[in-house]
Image (tube, rainbow, N blue to C red; front, side):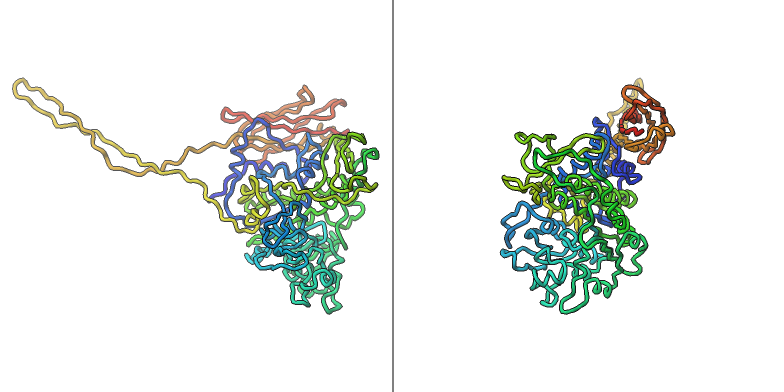
Length: 615
């Protein structure tokens, strides 16, 4: 089957050019997207799967980050993904999996992604039991990463938490308690599952035994624990198994292939420093409007790789003729929400979105790659109207954050603290809300609609049977011929009378009559920098146009009701067209708008983008 063209995916790729989280790609709200979405449907089996998990990333957390970067001027990378659905996340409380636990943790949620099966909260890819202290069976709980290895694919696991933490562990280990990360903690918490007791050992040991190709994150303290009945550490064990260890972003950058063996990048003893400041929310009456320090993490830990950098390196190393499976976790969206730190939560989601941008750019260049973006559970933060009123404001802890465009946004956390609130925000709980699931690439349409997390396991483990697109029916056409009848001659005055005509059926023939080909719906999009200096505008604002049909695009630059400049550009179907518009805005202009009107075959389509002018 020939792959269909992907107009919407092309538009997404244009929006992602340059790697900026904020992008000004928009479609006119009056345009129908049916043709663009239909063209993105591909039922074939993917060669590669990239699963990106935002830990604790519910719709509220996504919306807060979207608002922060500029609700009217920008988009997150994940907003360009064409297929979207929701999934329930509940864990279970018994061996028969009949008693739901509506609020799961990352172990229970991650295990559902990894194995397609329900288990207890706090359990890692292992069957549930009636007594949480009793280990379950590992039989039948193979993970998507393990299945990918058996298929001959390269495998990777990337996180900003410990590599032994719940989400990365769920893809690469099986154990009854998520805190059994290293051999020493396993001897205490999971004694029947140590290697000395005949079990698989700690999460760290299992990850080394699995020998995935790339393992990047934190958790050095777990790898320095000693093996059973030995003075050797897990780091020593990894070296014996052929792993190359890297400890900072320069060492990671120096690795250019897997020819020297698998890569173990452990960059921190615990989790990575959060990207933005982690000031905690406060009780009503004590709230102050704060601005996020976006340089916090890079300043404190300049040697640490960004999640986007680890994602790019993992993809570069894993790419192979047989394909690969890669899981990427943005871990501290959850951890910052637990501590009611709004800026920290937003910064981690934006950093995760930058990693999504890396994956989407790769998918655009390699359309046989399936990219799935989702969460393992939702979290506590809600967006409410800004107030500091102790009589009518929300209960719990709140924080007013000034967004990048100067708008106040209030986040409130009220899932922990009790009736009489302690001064410092208590650790907030997860919530049981359904989580968003987004996808692009082969079989991506399967995320559309409502699911349980376990329903999506075949999709990320290369096991979903491709659907067959409906083919047109054949029709039978009968061709007829008219034959004159015999003539009759009458004696006397000679008169020739024609005989009656007879219609004789001719031979039947089968004709393939395909259904009417539908021209793609006319859709256009424009990508522009979300911000530009006045001098850059005078030199020429760079724009990228895309369209589903060949046509002529009128491009205008306006400020309020004034048109600053305009030009006409020829646009080709499913190709990115670049151009520049130069103008001299007055000193009073703070924002300009790019308007595109595309005409093709008596159809019109429009798109626009807003650009903030900086002085």
